[in-house]
Image (cartoon, rainbow, N blue to C red; front, side):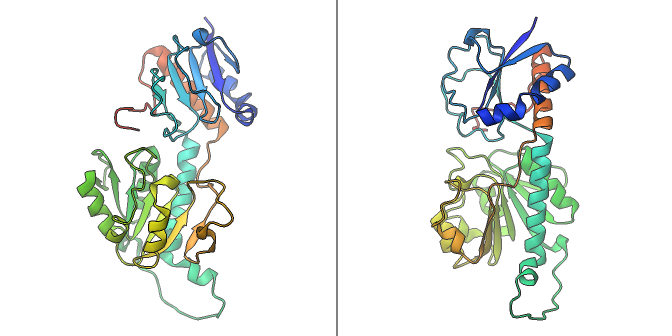
Length: 309
């Protein structure tokens, strides 16, 4: 029997996935039709983008799972009409892209590369940086992306620790959890990377109370979600204990031209490029999840809605 897969995405999403998704489904041995419009009660699976405009999942009475094209779930997690299992996107390309971006900027700040790249006075300062093992890096968020980055940074020799709201275990990496754990990891992190999801509990994790816990000269790197940071508190911290902030995500995107982040000499703005879902690998992930669901196996990237992620 042919499965009905409703593609609930934007026109741009459809152009990206129209060819790749059927190929991936066939490659997984699935007989499936990918449609942009279908009678709700006939839909077996929904491939979902938060920008699609779909907000009421009540009519989809036979739908076995909602498979998001996004890694973040903050726009759907509190939707009470969603009773079907929800799986976030855990795309290999997404994780590897994030790994590359995070490692690049951690190394940039660890090595002090900005001082050599921007040196208008041609100063000759032969000061070698410390070894990676002498640099303490903290990762807030130990989901798929956070774990990938933590393992990569540890592989480069950095003294890496991670934090999550609930207890996690990662081989060779110190893991903290809860409010006491948050205080501990902030106090030790010379370079702090934010990879938490945006939920009610993680909103402004870095604020006027938590920024002062960071060591003097700390660097903050945020490729996670803009709402994890209180913008005004960050600007104040840059006048005290934070040496630099590299930001890839913002509360409003594109970042308005008159936003103070653009003008600040110790803030680097990148235009939400840290990681991007790759259609080929993302389609393969969706197809694998449908194959697993049909076989009665647990979904990959299944969201625990009670925990908020």
